[in-house]
Structures are given as C-alpha cells and as structure tokens.
Length: 280
Ligand code: SF4
Image (cartoon, rainbow, N blue to C red; front, side, top):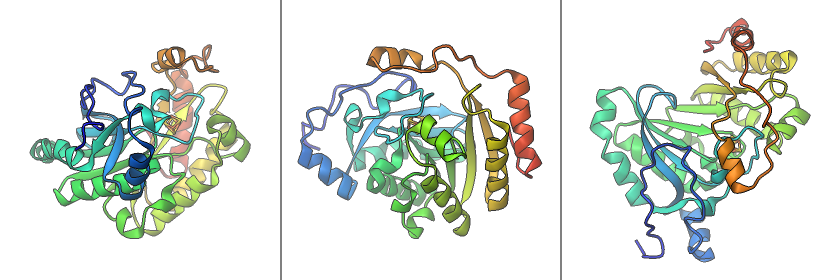
C-alpha cells in the first residue's frame, strides 16, 4: 500500500451517520482510474459491525463512497462523492472481513456491501463479495440497482441476497426523488429474478413524497410477480441525516417533513402483502 493511500482516519466507523469528507483528496487521478478498472482499491466511508438491519443475522457492513443518485431523503450525502471515502486496498478490505468470519458464521450473519452506491465501484464490489463468499460468509449487496448491468451472471452468483431499493414507480416521481431514471433498477430486478437471486426489497416511505397509493400498488404488483422477492422492508423516513446536509451546505428539501404515522406504514405494508409479499 502506498503512503498516499494511507489515511489517519480509522477504517472502522461508529456508524454510517459519522460525517466523513475529503479522505481521498490526495489520491491521484491515475490511481482512481486504475482502481475503478481493476478494483484493487476501494473508496470506503467505513466498516461497521453489529448491524441487524442490513441483511439476515448480524452483519459486518462496508459503506462505499460514491453515488449517482441524489435522493431527497438521503441520510448519507457525504457518500455521494467517491473522494470523500478512504482509499482502501482490496487486501486490507478482505482482511477486515476475515477478522469476523467465525463470529459471523456462528451468528448466522454475514457481510453486506452498502453505500453510497457500491456498483459505482463495480470491480472492487465484485472482488470483495467474491472474497467474502469464498470464505463461506453470507453476502449481501445493498444497491439502488441503477448500474446492475455492470455485474456478470457469474458475479451475481457470489451474492446471496440483493437489498434492492426501488424509490418510486412513476418515472417522473422517481426522477424527482432521485434525479435519475427508474428503468435500469427495474431491469436489474428482472435480471436478478432470471438468475434466481434473492431480493429483499426496500422502500423508503416519505409522507407526501413516496406515499402515493397507486405508485406503491404498481411496485407491489411488479415485485410480487418477480418470484424472488423474499421480503419487503418499508423504511419510515427519518431526520437522522439532516445534520450532514447542513454541515455540507446542501439544500435539504425535507426539513419540515415528519416521519410517517404508524397507520401510513401499516397501509403500505398491507399493500405489499396484498401482492403476496412478506412486508415489515
Ligand atoms: S441511493 Fe442511497 S446513497 Fe445514493 S443518494 Fe439515494 S439514499 Fe443516498
């Protein structure tokens, strides 16, 4: 590992809510280019341990930096830019996962690659997930699915479950919420179904933004027809990431939005259940 890649910040984070910026500012453009081509270096916000919400069992999670979406409710806007992350050689990232391999097996847990958007660094993602899988560790990829076509069929086999976010159904609404088109995410979901890879669908519920009944019915019908969606997590919007928007000086449109009422969360869960899905 070259010294330009080492940083003083600990790879292990207390939580993904820790604000981290500019950790790779000194990494040269050619190093970044090569890293993206080969996946020999990843740009990571942090590793965290002990998560019970990022896949089955207790998880070790690597949070990547870099995302092409700009979700109105993003709680980690410091992960939008890859250069905010720490440049971590693949061997070091693999060694970090390896430290927990026995514990994860005992606890029926595993490794989750999250972000940011992990497939912005698809070569690093593929190498890391493959390495975890070859250690006998359960693997999960948490993704918005937009760049799913970057993974080969063989690489999909290395992922036990994909935590797939569908942010909205209606194209205009999806663009409003994320800044990008919904089509590639839906194509990836169809491809995962074709390959028989399990999906845990995630839906972030924001009152007045993503609570449209018809839109949710459409997502539910699509997900129900896929045949590989094992569960749906309806994630109530919260304000935990607001301080990051403020500190980064980015305009935050949801300042006045409250978390959804329990009745609304129930209604959305019922909509997914009506399509034959397990929703929580
Ligand atoms: S996809 Fe995730 S990381 Fe990217 S902007 Fe949306 S919420 Fe944030």
